[in-house]
Length: 104
Image (tube, rainbow, N blue to C red; front, side):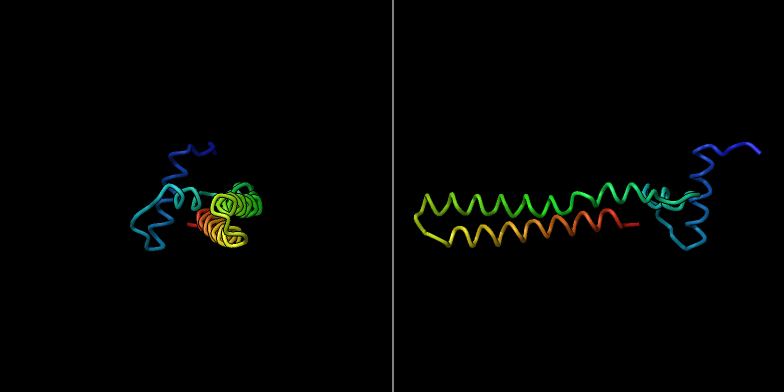
């Protein structure tokens, strides 16, 4: 038996999605439905830098807060607001990355 071509794999994937009742196909849906499914290493690669993302966003927020404190002489308030904004921005990006990595 000859190995299937990429076009044949896409055809099989579309047929499998049609059996599930999916009418619109995205490239990711077709790739996930292909024989063998999605690579787990791809998801690991997409989710590995999440801790770094959160840490860097928090550090940037704190840095901006300290600069605002020095500029306005408003002691801890710039730091507190910058820390909160950095943490919120970091969690928002982490959630986006998780959704992107696990989306079908």
